[in-house]
Length: 120
Length: 238
Image (tube, one colour):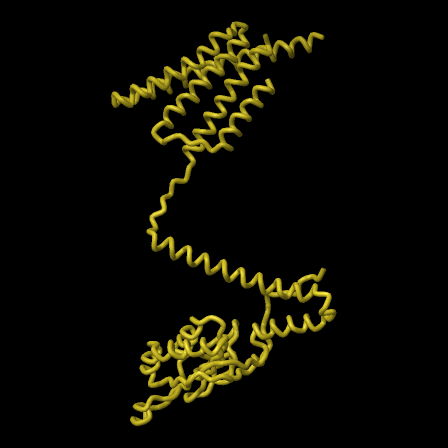
């Protein structure tokens, strides 16, 4: 777990220190990509807690979601319809659902632990 | 297995962190544009250069003093200290100063004399204007009717009298003595003041200014009062 957070910190510091900038037109793609990856991440955590984690699903989901979201945004720009909103909506809803499930699982685990402690 | 999952999560989190940081960089760039043209930038550059050279000369001066202090050959730190004190007193206007300079004679205009109009005090505003005009030149010292003008000098009206350093100055004619760093500077000041529009300003108040030719030796009196330093305190020595 800690090594994952280390990875996050490493990514942030690398991004800030290298001072990489992308053209302003592409910021919506990047924000959608961030959202998609967050969705994948929380999906992965949920799957892990529910004991259904699959490596292939996780990795392919990460890249596929990002590609899909970026493709949708690209299509939206060319059609003149804000299609990236659809992606944001879908990912947002899923993000909330995943986090809710994670919360419930953790709560259940916690209360079970408590009960066990009381029984002993 | 667990290790592999942690590895995957680490990579994904790394990518997320990197993308977020990039997004942050992009969104938070200050893209205020520089609308100055070449000429304005050149002016800015010349201002900065001037500051640079002033700082350099100041550093040179301080280095000189430092070298004097540390010079074993001098063997007399007291003399150096005295020199420094004398320098400081001179720059504060506490000592008499002699140098090349010019004298301005402010007197009632011929018309005012001929028409018999009352000769009044020189108004403080006009005097301040003149002092500002003179102060355009660097490194000059001046005394108005025998009153040395220093950094804290106030030129103002007290109970109907125009005062310099709170001492009333005489009604015109009066003399304003100016010394500068070199004879050349004094000549420049002379031609500048001769062509200045300050004459017209004085003429409105029935006064004229006569500017003397630059002189090699002109003596200004010292500032003869105590300098009020309410907010300055002596520093703790090491």
